[in-house]
Image (tube, rainbow, N blue to C red):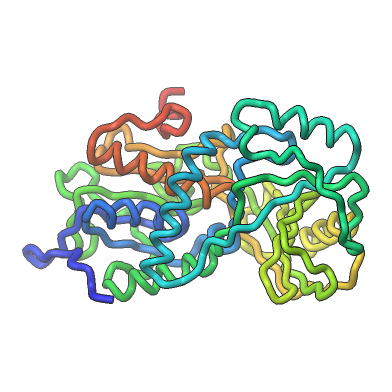
Length: 361
C-alpha cells in the first residue's frame, strides 16, 4: 500500500486539516469521512478506552426488548454497511458477517406482540412474520423464534486493531495521551505538539470526562461485561437473543452479553457480572460449555440515548463526536458524516444529536 500524501510541513510544524483524539468506532468513522474527501489528518490515541474493542459488534435495526425501531435505522444501516465494505476493501480483511438475529419467545403473548409490531411503520421490513420452530436440543424455546432481517456482526476488535496498523503505516497515528492543558483555544490556528490543524475532533468515548472543553456534557458511561464460552454441542448459526445475546464467533466459540452497570466506571472484569451472565444463559441453554474469556468496557451512554455531535459554543474549531451508546457500529458512520458536513459545509446537525441541546438547558 502506497503511503498517503496526507501531511505537509510548515515552519517546523506538520500541517493537517484535522487532529482526531480517539481511534474507536467514532474516530475511525470520522477518518473515513476525511479519506473520502481527501482531507489530511492525524490521530492521537493512548488505548485507554476499550468499549469499541469489547463491543458485541451487532448491527440490528430493532430494539428487541419492546419491538420498536432503532432511531434512523434505515439511514444508519445504509451509510454504515457502505463504510465497512470500503474499509474491508482497503485493509483486505473481513469485518462484516451477515448473520440473522432470532428473538426467543417466552410466551404466546410475546408472539402476538411480535406480529403486531411487524405491521408498524419502520418495522415492517425488519421483522419476519414467520415464526421459526426450535430444532436445537440445546435450546429451550417452546414458543419458537422471530427473525430480525438485515442484521449482522462487525468484528470490532479486528477493525480497530487493523485500522491502527493502517494508520501507523501512513504515519497518521500518535500513540500517547492527549494533553488538553497545552491547547490555546483562543488562537486562530490549532497548534498541538508539532502539528498545526484547522479543526480538532474529540472522539475519546468515556474519556470525555477528562476533557475540559466537553466534560460538561451528560455522558454518563455504562459499564458492560461480556464472556466468551466454548460450547461444542451448541451449533448455532444465528445470533440468539433472549435475556442475553448469544453471538457465534466460529470454532464453537460464542460471545455472551451484556451487563449494564452504572456505578462502576472501571475496565476491570467482575465475578458478579460473570455470574449474572451465566445465570441468565442457563435459563435457556442446556449443554456443556466452558468460559474461556471475559472482557469489560465503559460504553459512552447519554441520558436521552442520543449521540453527542457538534461544535463547542465558544471555540468553533473544537468539535465533539461521542455518546454512541450500545449501537456504535450502526450509528458511528452516520453521525460522523453529519459532523463532517457541519464542519466543512455548515450543514446543521439533527437536533436529536446536536451536543448543544444540553448547553441551552
